[in-house]
Image 1: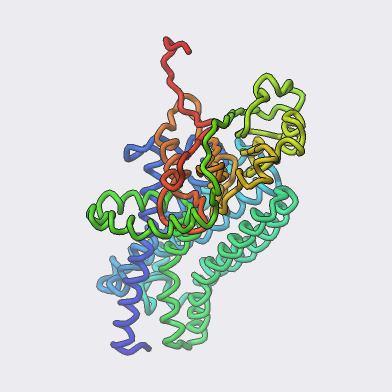
Image 2: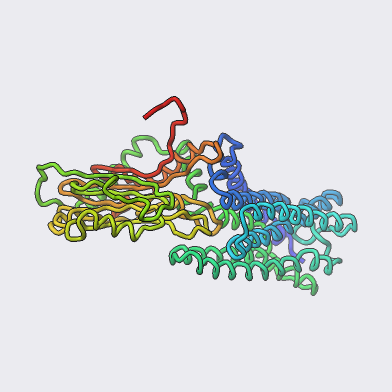
Length: 517
């Protein structure tokens, strides 16, 4: 039996852990609802593609469940003030804590059906309704039955199933928990193997495996000490440290889920960007402090630029840089010939941005040959994406730069070092952000000037619904997240070069039918 001091410590920890989860889950919920258009959003993410719609809906439901469970763990021993209130607290904890466990299994099942069984978006959308019915309805029925049997009582930490009914505790909660653990382990191993066979992208595979391990680890960690504590109580034994860890970790599951599923602390997540927007708007430093910060980075910036590229002579003649962007729409090489129709000869530097390119290597070689071969033009390139249509890709977003070989050999043209030359802004697959939308960049020095080139494919409208706001966010992230220097100054990329060239399929359109080019 816990002492009064120990009880106070448990109650304090339950309050802290539950509050952290409530705030984290509420943040994710608000962000996703805003993206659905509830708070002035533009349906940005939810109209992107069916996989993103489903993934974000799954995370939204999980966040709501976590808030409901955490709000009743927050009450702690207050549930013991009256029988009616105790029944209410025990009922709600049983319902929503169990629902959170079952919903984790449903999310794993959704991943399995998508990436392993290759079910269609329509089939997967129908499964969500079944999952909601099982989670909310099934867990609610269990909670109602236990309430009807008068099985709720104070259980050391909060009101839940009485210690007099250990069989009900096991079969109505922990047996389901252990089954879900086992099922999630099986699913995530299967998904990792399927993605390994499908993506062909080692970076994406590594990121996927890391996130799958985090999913399993967070889910097990949330409930491990709770399971140990309730097992000890079954044998009329209890240890304060186990009890404390139970109170510490179980109410934190909403925080863990926001951390992993919601991307609350991922550097490139849209949610984190939304939070940064809020703090910049309401909590940004005064202008003199911002100027001081800019002046502090100026020295590092100039050092970085000089260290990366130095011009020996002043360039006093004209040079021609030709830029072109082309959404191939999955066309093959023969369909984009003749190259001379859109890539005329006679220029010094060629910058080519491609979207939805399924023949990247062949096209790059064909362009270089069209310009005169490697003896005449040297090729530089950067790309993101995949040709795997099963995962929602339509080809590569690619940037190719061709410079005269004599300029490269003389040092007049030189690529510059960068810390981050791509920003992925595609579908949220739950385990990583896909590269079916986003940007790639290539910084270079040419004679006495520096250039930053960014090629992109931004969010498009969907079924008549505008995603204008989402495209603005894409642009903001492209400029802010690209670090095209060897020192991260914290400044947007377009501020660090003499010239910035942005091109690609940006999807900004004027819908007025009366306008003619």
